[in-house]
Each structure stands twice: as structure tokens, then as C-alpha cells.
Length: 104
Image 1 (spheres, rainbow, N blue to C red):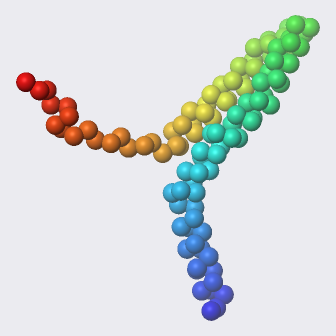
Image 2 (cartoon, one colour):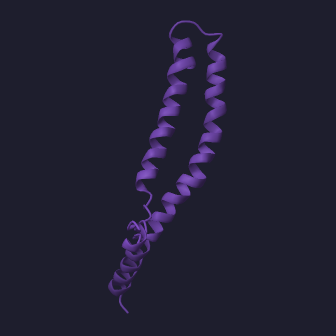
């Protein structure tokens, strides 16, 4: 076996691994594990920003009380929607026509 044969086999194996199931598993893990963990970290941070806004004035009060907490919420909402769109949808099972036909 030459090094070129080895490279080709590795490339083929990697391509098979990265197609389909590995991508779906990664997206599912991001949505079910990583995103909630990041939200757990970001929520107290946003709450602290809002609490600090009470002692601020002017732009800093707006930044800490409205802008940054809203930006954090919008970012998590957008990431959640993006991951929802990346998650493969289950194909619904077709209902037999006999089951949907009205009975007389």
C-alpha cells in the first residue's frame, strides 16, 4: 500500500463519516446540549447587565438595560431557529386512503 492509496482511503472514509448521520448528530448535540449550556451562562450575565443599568446614566444605561440583553436574546433566538432549520425533519407516514375515506 502506497501513501497515495492510504490518503485516498482516508479521504473516502472521512467523506462517508461526515455525510448524513454525523452531521445530523452534531446539529442535534448543538441544539440539545451546547445551546442550553450557553443560555445558562448568558442568562445571569444579561440579568447582571440589567441590574447594573440601574446605576448607570445616559448611553450606558440604555446599553446595559436594553441593547445588550436584547442582542443576547436575539442571538440565541436566531441560533435556535437556525439549528431548527438544520435539523432533519421526520417524514410523516402516509395515512392509507381507506382510513380517511368517509364511511356511508
